[in-house]
Image 1 (cartoon, one colour):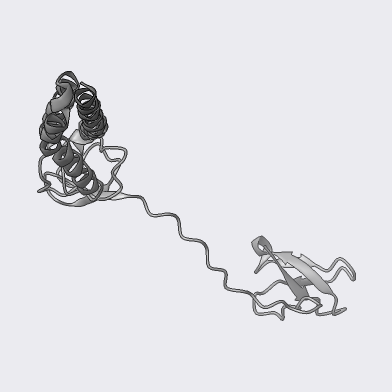
Image 2 (tube, rainbow, N blue to C red):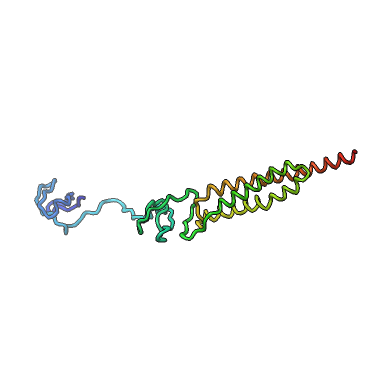
Length: 206
C-alpha cells in the first residue's frame, strides 16, 4: 500500500510505497531529494468520500445436533464418533429430525406387526364363513385398529427422539399391514351383510 506525500520543493504530490518510508526518495517532477517520513502530511483524495456501511454477513446454517448415548453431550448429528468420550456411534436414522434422547423407549414394531397380522388372518377367514362374516369381521377390530393407532403414535415419538428409531421401517410396515386389515375387515362386514340379505330373500321366496 502506498501513501501520498508532498514534495517540500514544488509541493507536488508524490506516491511513496510503504517499503520506502523512512528513506530518501526523489520527486518525479522537480527531482528534489527528501526523506519520506510517516509524519508528513498525507494528501486526501479528491471527490466525495462515501461513508462505510456496516454490512452484516449472513450466518451459516446451524448443523443439526443430537445427544451422545454414552456421555449425553451435544454432538453434530452426522458424527460417527463422539469427540468427548471417543465412543464409536451408529449412523442416525435419516428420517428423524430431532435429537435422540439417551433414555429413549424401545420400539414396539414387533407387537404392531403381530396385531396387524392376526387381524389380517381373521379378515381372510371371515370371507369363508359367509353369513357369519359380520361377526368375525368385528373380531378383527381389536387387533388391526390398536396396531394402526400404536404405529401412528410410535412414529411421532421416533421423530421427536423419544423412541428408538431403529424400528421405524418395521413400524411403517406394520402400519401398512394394519390398514390393509381394516380395509379387508370392512369388505368382509359388508360381504356378510349382503349374504344375509340374499339368504333372507331366498327364504321368503320359498
